[in-house]
Amino acid sequence: MKTTRIIVLALTAATLSGTAVPVLANGRAKVPPVHVEHEDGEEILVHKGEASFYSQKFHGRTTASGETMNQNKPTAASRTLPLGAKATVTNQDNGKSVDVIVNDRGPYVDGRVIDLSRSAARKLDMIEDGTAPVKVEVKPSEQPTDTAREKVEEKVDQLTPGNQVAQGDGNRNSGNSGGSRSDTVSHSGSGK
Image: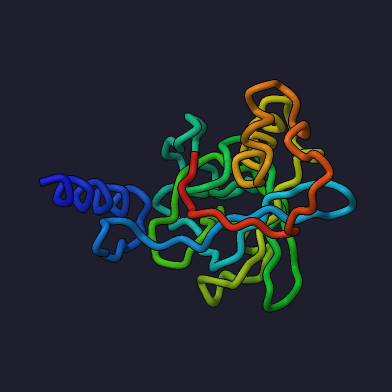
């Protein structure tokens, strides 16, 4: 019964997002893992996979953040990145980049990590192909609001070994007691 409910919810989400959802054993689309990388001394969230873009029929509908979907604004849907976060999306085929604000949830298709507004997809020159391999980067220092920065920092902390202990005492980096740490930490893809 639980599996049936999950499949129904996934199909409902597909109907709302305009994308097809593969029915998998666990009822979820497979999403490549989000991981943490270090760039210029800052821990950043990185998500690599395939990008798609919203169908025109979603223009004017309400997004998960409560905003109205506007195909002319640089926005995106992500299953794993915090709502309100600013992300830089780079098309791995041509090197073109665009900054977007995550204001919705999705996409719900295997391998897809982000669903872009039409204007963002156009800047990446992916309209004709419909999808593109992308690298999505989210830097805490570049967030548009303190709330977005805090959400991104929390996500970084969740994905960084040693920081989980630090969350309890209010110091982001107190869990790093001089021990070495890998530059890349994998995550299962379970979003907030």
